[in-house]
Image 1 (cartoon, rainbow, N blue to C red):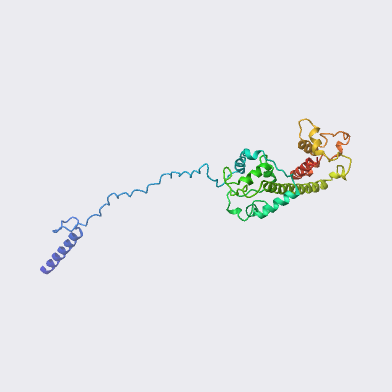
Image 2: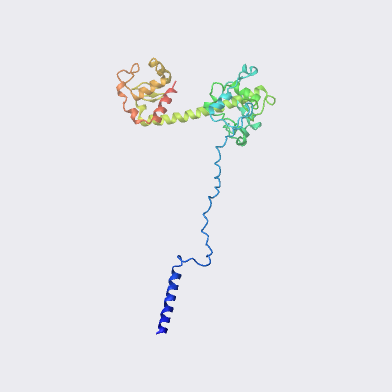
Length: 307
Protein backbone atom coordinates (compact mmCIF):
# COMPACT_ATOMS: atom_id res chain seq x y z
CA UNK A 1 0.00 0.00 0.00
CA UNK A 2 2.93 2.38 0.57
CA UNK A 3 3.82 2.63 -3.07
CA UNK A 4 0.32 3.71 -3.90
CA UNK A 5 0.46 6.40 -1.22
CA UNK A 6 3.75 7.63 -2.58
CA UNK A 7 2.36 7.67 -6.05
CA UNK A 8 -0.72 9.58 -4.93
CA UNK A 9 1.40 11.99 -2.99
CA UNK A 10 3.58 12.63 -6.02
CA UNK A 11 0.58 13.30 -8.18
CA UNK A 12 -0.78 15.78 -5.68
CA UNK A 13 2.52 17.61 -5.49
CA UNK A 14 2.70 17.90 -9.26
CA UNK A 15 -0.90 19.03 -9.44
CA UNK A 16 -0.39 21.76 -6.84
CA UNK A 17 2.74 22.83 -8.63
CA UNK A 18 0.90 23.26 -11.88
CA UNK A 19 -1.82 25.22 -10.10
CA UNK A 20 0.81 27.44 -8.57
CA UNK A 21 2.37 28.05 -11.95
CA UNK A 22 -1.03 28.78 -13.49
CA UNK A 23 -1.75 31.33 -10.77
CA UNK A 24 1.57 33.04 -11.12
CA UNK A 25 -0.11 36.44 -10.71
CA UNK A 26 -0.73 35.57 -7.04
CA UNK A 27 2.70 34.14 -6.33
CA UNK A 28 5.57 36.54 -5.94
CA UNK A 29 8.45 35.20 -8.00
CA UNK A 30 11.82 34.97 -6.36
CA UNK A 31 13.43 37.14 -9.01
CA UNK A 32 11.51 40.15 -10.16
CA UNK A 33 10.89 39.80 -13.86
CA UNK A 34 12.33 42.44 -16.08
CA UNK A 35 9.60 44.95 -16.41
CA UNK A 36 8.56 45.61 -19.94
CA UNK A 37 8.31 49.36 -20.05
CA UNK A 38 5.01 50.65 -21.01
CA UNK A 39 5.15 52.47 -24.27
CA UNK A 40 6.08 55.99 -23.50
CA UNK A 41 3.33 58.33 -24.28
CA UNK A 42 4.67 60.65 -26.87
CA UNK A 43 5.19 64.06 -25.57
CA UNK A 44 3.23 66.77 -27.16
CA UNK A 45 4.77 67.15 -30.58
CA UNK A 46 6.60 70.29 -31.28
CA UNK A 47 4.27 72.17 -33.51
CA UNK A 48 5.77 73.16 -36.77
CA UNK A 49 4.45 76.60 -37.44
CA UNK A 50 2.25 76.78 -40.47
CA UNK A 51 3.76 78.76 -43.26
CA UNK A 52 2.84 82.35 -42.83
CA UNK A 53 0.29 83.42 -45.36
CA UNK A 54 1.78 86.15 -47.44
CA UNK A 55 0.19 89.47 -46.85
CA UNK A 56 -1.59 91.11 -49.72
CA UNK A 57 1.03 92.29 -52.16
CA UNK A 58 1.64 95.94 -52.19
CA UNK A 59 0.70 97.15 -55.62
CA UNK A 60 3.59 98.63 -57.46
CA UNK A 61 2.40 101.81 -59.07
CA UNK A 62 2.66 101.89 -62.82
CA UNK A 63 5.56 103.98 -63.99
CA UNK A 64 4.49 107.50 -64.57
CA UNK A 65 5.06 108.80 -68.05
CA UNK A 66 6.40 112.27 -68.09
CA UNK A 67 3.94 114.75 -69.47
CA UNK A 68 6.35 115.69 -72.22
CA UNK A 69 7.13 112.14 -73.32
CA UNK A 70 5.68 110.49 -76.38
CA UNK A 71 2.37 108.75 -75.66
CA UNK A 72 2.44 105.03 -76.25
CA UNK A 73 -1.23 104.44 -76.91
CA UNK A 74 -4.49 106.29 -76.59
CA UNK A 75 -7.45 104.44 -75.10
CA UNK A 76 -10.01 106.54 -76.90
CA UNK A 77 -9.96 108.02 -80.37
CA UNK A 78 -11.37 111.19 -78.83
CA UNK A 79 -8.23 111.54 -76.71
CA UNK A 80 -6.06 111.62 -79.77
CA UNK A 81 -8.33 114.04 -81.59
CA UNK A 82 -8.19 116.43 -78.66
CA UNK A 83 -4.42 116.38 -78.79
CA UNK A 84 -4.50 117.18 -82.49
CA UNK A 85 -6.54 120.29 -81.86
CA UNK A 86 -3.47 122.38 -81.16
CA UNK A 87 -3.44 126.11 -81.80
CA UNK A 88 -2.07 126.93 -85.23
CA UNK A 89 0.95 129.23 -84.74
CA UNK A 90 0.48 132.87 -85.82
CA UNK A 91 2.98 132.51 -88.66
CA UNK A 92 0.68 129.89 -90.22
CA UNK A 93 -2.75 131.11 -89.12
CA UNK A 94 -3.00 133.80 -91.78
CA UNK A 95 -2.04 131.58 -94.72
CA UNK A 96 -4.62 130.25 -97.17
CA UNK A 97 -4.45 127.72 -99.97
CA UNK A 98 -3.85 129.56 -103.27
CA UNK A 99 -5.20 126.58 -105.22
CA UNK A 100 -8.94 125.93 -105.51
CA UNK A 101 -10.28 122.58 -104.41
CA UNK A 102 -9.80 120.04 -107.18
CA UNK A 103 -7.40 122.19 -109.22
CA UNK A 104 -6.14 119.61 -111.72
CA UNK A 105 -2.61 120.98 -112.12
CA UNK A 106 -2.11 121.39 -108.37
CA UNK A 107 -3.46 117.90 -107.69
CA UNK A 108 -1.12 116.40 -110.29
CA UNK A 109 1.88 118.30 -108.92
CA UNK A 110 1.00 117.31 -105.37
CA UNK A 111 0.73 113.65 -106.35
CA UNK A 112 4.18 113.81 -107.95
CA UNK A 113 5.63 115.30 -104.76
CA UNK A 114 3.90 112.62 -102.69
CA UNK A 115 5.51 109.91 -104.81
CA UNK A 116 8.93 111.53 -105.25
CA UNK A 117 9.36 112.08 -101.50
CA UNK A 118 8.27 108.51 -100.74
CA UNK A 119 5.38 109.62 -98.54
CA UNK A 120 3.63 106.33 -99.30
CA UNK A 121 6.19 104.47 -97.18
CA UNK A 122 4.29 105.69 -94.11
CA UNK A 123 0.98 107.02 -95.41
CA UNK A 124 0.30 104.22 -97.92
CA UNK A 125 -0.27 104.44 -101.64
CA UNK A 126 -3.95 105.28 -101.10
CA UNK A 127 -3.24 107.68 -98.18
CA UNK A 128 -4.97 105.34 -95.75
CA UNK A 129 -2.09 105.29 -93.23
CA UNK A 130 -1.05 101.72 -93.99
CA UNK A 131 2.39 102.15 -95.56
CA UNK A 132 5.09 99.53 -95.05
CA UNK A 133 6.67 101.52 -92.19
CA UNK A 134 3.37 102.26 -90.46
CA UNK A 135 3.47 99.07 -88.39
CA UNK A 136 6.46 100.29 -86.38
CA UNK A 137 5.19 103.83 -85.86
CA UNK A 138 3.35 105.02 -82.77
CA UNK A 139 1.18 106.89 -83.28
CA UNK A 140 0.45 105.48 -86.69
CA UNK A 141 -0.29 107.75 -89.65
CA UNK A 142 -3.93 108.74 -89.91
CA UNK A 143 -6.21 107.80 -92.77
CA UNK A 144 -6.13 110.94 -94.92
CA UNK A 145 -9.12 109.69 -96.92
CA UNK A 146 -11.40 109.31 -93.90
CA UNK A 147 -14.26 111.75 -94.63
CA UNK A 148 -15.22 112.01 -90.96
CA UNK A 149 -11.73 112.81 -89.75
CA UNK A 150 -10.85 115.11 -92.63
CA UNK A 151 -14.05 117.10 -92.22
CA UNK A 152 -13.45 117.93 -88.56
CA UNK A 153 -13.67 121.71 -88.06
CA UNK A 154 -10.01 122.14 -87.16
CA UNK A 155 -8.64 120.07 -90.07
CA UNK A 156 -8.46 122.97 -92.51
CA UNK A 157 -6.10 123.40 -95.44
CA UNK A 158 -4.07 125.76 -93.26
CA UNK A 159 -3.87 123.09 -90.57
CA UNK A 160 -2.57 120.52 -93.07
CA UNK A 161 -0.08 123.05 -94.46
CA UNK A 162 1.21 123.65 -90.93
CA UNK A 163 1.51 119.94 -90.13
CA UNK A 164 3.41 119.23 -93.35
CA UNK A 165 5.77 122.15 -92.79
CA UNK A 166 6.59 121.57 -89.12
CA UNK A 167 6.33 117.79 -88.92
CA UNK A 168 5.19 115.88 -85.87
CA UNK A 169 8.13 115.70 -83.49
CA UNK A 170 6.85 118.38 -81.13
CA UNK A 171 3.90 118.09 -78.71
CA UNK A 172 1.11 117.22 -78.82
CA UNK A 173 1.77 115.03 -81.87
CA UNK A 174 4.98 113.13 -81.14
CA UNK A 175 4.88 111.43 -84.52
CA UNK A 176 7.58 110.48 -87.01
CA UNK A 177 6.34 113.01 -89.58
CA UNK A 178 9.44 114.81 -90.95
CA UNK A 179 9.77 118.59 -91.13
CA UNK A 180 9.24 119.54 -94.78
CA UNK A 181 9.42 123.32 -94.70
CA UNK A 182 13.14 123.22 -95.45
CA UNK A 183 12.75 120.73 -98.32
CA UNK A 184 9.56 121.88 -100.01
CA UNK A 185 8.62 125.38 -101.09
CA UNK A 186 5.34 126.90 -99.97
CA UNK A 187 3.70 126.29 -103.38
CA UNK A 188 4.83 122.67 -103.25
CA UNK A 189 3.37 122.20 -99.78
CA UNK A 190 0.08 123.76 -100.89
CA UNK A 191 0.05 121.44 -103.90
CA UNK A 192 0.50 118.51 -101.54
CA UNK A 193 -2.42 119.76 -99.44
CA UNK A 194 -4.57 120.09 -102.57
CA UNK A 195 -3.67 116.54 -103.60
CA UNK A 196 -4.63 115.21 -100.15
CA UNK A 197 -7.93 117.07 -100.29
CA UNK A 198 -8.69 115.61 -103.72
CA UNK A 199 -8.41 112.09 -102.32
CA UNK A 200 -10.73 112.91 -99.43
CA UNK A 201 -13.33 114.45 -101.75
CA UNK A 202 -13.04 111.44 -104.05
CA UNK A 203 -13.63 109.11 -101.13
CA UNK A 204 -16.69 111.08 -100.04
CA UNK A 205 -18.06 111.10 -103.59
CA UNK A 206 -17.52 107.36 -103.98
CA UNK A 207 -19.19 106.61 -100.65
CA UNK A 208 -22.10 108.89 -101.50
CA UNK A 209 -22.55 107.28 -104.89
CA UNK A 210 -22.65 103.84 -103.28
CA UNK A 211 -25.25 105.05 -100.80
CA UNK A 212 -27.28 106.63 -103.60
CA UNK A 213 -27.34 103.38 -105.53
CA UNK A 214 -28.37 101.45 -102.43
CA UNK A 215 -31.16 103.95 -101.70
CA UNK A 216 -32.43 103.88 -105.28
CA UNK A 217 -32.57 100.08 -105.14
CA UNK A 218 -34.84 100.31 -102.08
CA UNK A 219 -36.95 103.05 -103.69
CA UNK A 220 -37.46 100.88 -106.77
CA UNK A 221 -38.34 97.89 -104.61
CA UNK A 222 -41.21 99.67 -102.86
CA UNK A 223 -42.36 101.53 -105.99
CA UNK A 224 -41.80 105.17 -104.95
CA UNK A 225 -40.99 106.25 -108.52
CA UNK A 226 -44.56 105.42 -109.54
CA UNK A 227 -45.66 108.70 -107.94
CA UNK A 228 -42.54 110.75 -107.18
CA UNK A 229 -40.26 112.28 -109.77
CA UNK A 230 -36.51 112.87 -109.52
CA UNK A 231 -34.88 114.55 -112.49
CA UNK A 232 -36.33 112.91 -115.58
CA UNK A 233 -37.38 109.76 -113.81
CA UNK A 234 -40.65 108.92 -112.03
CA UNK A 235 -44.30 109.95 -111.95
CA UNK A 236 -45.98 113.23 -111.09
CA UNK A 237 -48.79 112.12 -108.80
CA UNK A 238 -46.89 113.09 -105.65
CA UNK A 239 -44.42 115.90 -104.85
CA UNK A 240 -41.22 115.82 -106.88
CA UNK A 241 -37.99 115.10 -105.06
CA UNK A 242 -35.69 117.63 -106.70
CA UNK A 243 -34.82 120.12 -103.95
CA UNK A 244 -36.73 118.20 -101.27
CA UNK A 245 -33.70 118.31 -98.96
CA UNK A 246 -34.00 122.11 -98.85
CA UNK A 247 -37.80 122.46 -98.91
CA UNK A 248 -38.36 119.93 -96.13
CA UNK A 249 -36.65 122.22 -93.62
CA UNK A 250 -39.27 124.95 -94.27
CA UNK A 251 -42.44 122.85 -94.09
CA UNK A 252 -43.16 122.70 -90.36
CA UNK A 253 -41.78 125.29 -87.91
CA UNK A 254 -39.45 123.68 -85.38
CA UNK A 255 -39.10 120.48 -87.40
CA UNK A 256 -35.86 119.62 -89.18
CA UNK A 257 -35.75 118.42 -92.77
CA UNK A 258 -34.73 114.97 -91.58
CA UNK A 259 -37.66 114.78 -89.15
CA UNK A 260 -40.13 116.00 -91.76
CA UNK A 261 -39.04 113.50 -94.42
CA UNK A 262 -38.97 110.58 -92.00
CA UNK A 263 -42.42 111.41 -90.62
CA UNK A 264 -43.82 111.80 -94.13
CA UNK A 265 -42.72 108.26 -94.95
CA UNK A 266 -43.94 106.66 -91.72
CA UNK A 267 -47.21 108.62 -91.58
CA UNK A 268 -48.06 109.95 -95.07
CA UNK A 269 -51.24 111.64 -93.88
CA UNK A 270 -49.48 113.69 -91.22
CA UNK A 271 -48.51 116.48 -93.61
CA UNK A 272 -50.00 117.57 -96.92
CA UNK A 273 -47.54 119.53 -99.09
CA UNK A 274 -49.04 122.57 -100.83
CA UNK A 275 -50.88 121.50 -103.95
CA UNK A 276 -51.22 117.89 -102.83
CA UNK A 277 -53.82 118.21 -100.08
CA UNK A 278 -56.24 115.91 -101.88
CA UNK A 279 -53.60 113.28 -102.67
CA UNK A 280 -51.99 112.80 -99.28
CA UNK A 281 -53.97 109.61 -98.65
CA UNK A 282 -52.78 107.99 -101.88
CA UNK A 283 -49.42 107.12 -100.37
CA UNK A 284 -49.67 103.75 -98.58
CA UNK A 285 -49.58 104.10 -94.81
CA UNK A 286 -48.01 100.66 -94.48
CA UNK A 287 -44.80 101.71 -96.20
CA UNK A 288 -42.95 102.02 -92.91
CA UNK A 289 -43.80 98.42 -92.11
CA UNK A 290 -42.25 97.20 -95.36
CA UNK A 291 -38.92 98.92 -94.75
CA UNK A 292 -36.19 97.86 -92.39
CA UNK A 293 -34.65 100.55 -90.19
CA UNK A 294 -31.59 100.55 -92.44
CA UNK A 295 -33.66 100.91 -95.60
CA UNK A 296 -35.63 103.77 -94.09
CA UNK A 297 -32.39 105.55 -93.16
CA UNK A 298 -31.05 105.09 -96.69
CA UNK A 299 -34.13 106.73 -98.23
CA UNK A 300 -34.19 109.61 -95.74
CA UNK A 301 -30.49 110.37 -96.22
CA UNK A 302 -30.86 110.10 -100.00
CA UNK A 303 -33.73 112.60 -100.04
CA UNK A 304 -31.82 114.97 -97.75
CA UNK A 305 -29.08 115.11 -100.39
CA UNK A 306 -31.51 116.28 -103.05
CA UNK A 307 -30.99 120.06 -102.84
